[in-house]
Every structure is written in C-alpha cells, then in structure tokens.
Length: 137
Length: 224
Image (tube, rainbow over all chains, first blue to last red; front, side, top):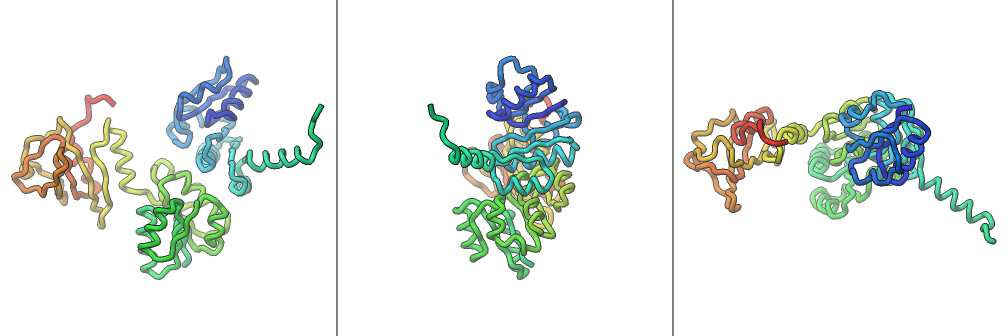
C-alpha cells in the first residue's frame, strides 16, 4: 500500500515506522525537518518537508497514488481539513483522522471520515482501569 | 434572518455592521476576548467570546436556528470546520472566506459557498515572485480601489526621479511618502523619489502588477 502520514509526532512517527516495517511504501510529512528525528532507526520511507494542507505539496508527494492517508498533526482543524482534501479532492480510499475534541470527532465521523479521538478513548480506558483491581504483587 | 459570524476581525466586523444596518439579527463569535470587547464597543451587545470551531460554542450561539453562518476567520481550516459543523447542525446556508485561493475546490465540494479575499489573492501571487515583500496591500476601498504600500528598493527604476516624471497607471495616486527616517510627506510633482521611501498608493486591483514593475522593477536575476 502507498501510505502518506501527515505529522511526524509521537503517533505519526510510530505509525510510519510500523507500516514501513510491514513493507508498505510510506511517505511521512512534516513542516519541521527536526520532527523526523523521532522516526525509528532504519526507516526506509520518504521524508517530506511540507504542509499537508497545501494541495500542491500533497500532489508533489503522490497523494493521487495514495491508498491511505493519516492526518496526525496537533491541530484538530488541520487534520479535518487535510482529511477532507484527501478524500473529496483526491479520492483517497482510506483516510484516517485524529481529532482530540470528542464532540468534533463524533460530528466528523458522521460526516464520513474515519476518526479517532485519543481523548474519549483514553478516558474510557482509564476509567476501566480504575474499576479493576490494581495489578500488585 | 439570524446570521452567525465566526471571526471578529476586520472582515467579520464590517460584515456585522453592514448586516445590522439591514436589520438582520447578528451575532459575532470571536475567540480573543480583547478583540471581542473592541467589537462589542462598536456594535453593542452582538458579540460572544468563544471558539467557533467548538460545537458547544456554536450550540450556545443558537446555531440550529441560524439561517446563515459566515465563517470569516483568517484560517481556512477553521472556516471549513465551522461550516461543516454548522451544516451538520442543520444550517441551510454557509459561506466561508478563503485565504488561499487553491482551497476553493474543497469548499465547493463540501457544499460551502466561498468568497476569496482579493487582497490575499494578490498578495499570494506577489509573494511567490518577490524575495522579500516590497508591496503590502493595506486596505480594500470601495469600487475595486485598493490602498497599498510599496517600499522602493535600491534598484528601483524610479529612484532619483520626480513624481511628475513617473507615469502611473490610470486611477493610481501616490498619496503619501514616508522617508527612511519615518517622516511622512505629501508628495508634489517636484518631490524626488529615493530608495527606502515607502509610498502609500491608491490604485486599482488590476493595476498592481504594473505598479510593481514600474516602482520595484523586474525581479529577474535575483535569488529566490
């Protein structure tokens, strides 16, 4: 699969590394070159410096041939915007979008994006943890 | 009509002012509380402090009964999200200000009406061509007139000439010259132009390219 990952933070770099290790063709994109330091050693994918919300940049880095697009910047709106662009303008089949704000996440899921909110997901897991017995020795 | 305006900057403020004059019910949502206070002072009580990208803010503003939402912040991604959420809440008509003309297609595909800021479009064009920004759009006036500032570079083709000798495009006027020392002067025909002078010019949008060439000169051969 051709995969573009926008945002080389902790999550983006990790996902890019995992998919690369699985043998996919990965392009990781970030506006800050320094962010690529987070990529695992031996990462074979392409590192692209640029803004994933810019149509020209997306085209330059092969959005038209992409099978999947991950929107993982720190900004919910930037992620929504880039995801809509990938899906609506370039017809990318799988567009996965992180949205911190749970309310916004629900709305954009209803609007057809594949969304993930670390906030609601994390909250649920931690509340479940509290309900269970602690794993003490 | 009940009209929500997201963004209380220059565009949002003037839009609200105009719509209130036409007796619409208007609410401006502005994120920055200082700016919101300024707008409130000018408009009366038609301002709310909040982030329009949050559905809860839009709900508190009564988005579901709005006839129109105008998203006019300076960020295209924010404007898209505001319009998307508004439509999701059942608003029949949404209009977004676009700052980057390249984004128009996406908004159209999402069923959002758009308006491109002419000044921004010109600026974007110019920025691509100039190593440094020597022409700054200041204000859009009525009837297609614009107020711009041009700083004369060392290599300006008009350096050393008098204002009278410079044949500007039709309906263009040098209205003020600020010299490198920061002293403003009203130019006369005899005023000599020097590098470093900042010229405040009234002109038409379509003449900006010619003005740039006349006063700044060709940028070919410069490093970009």
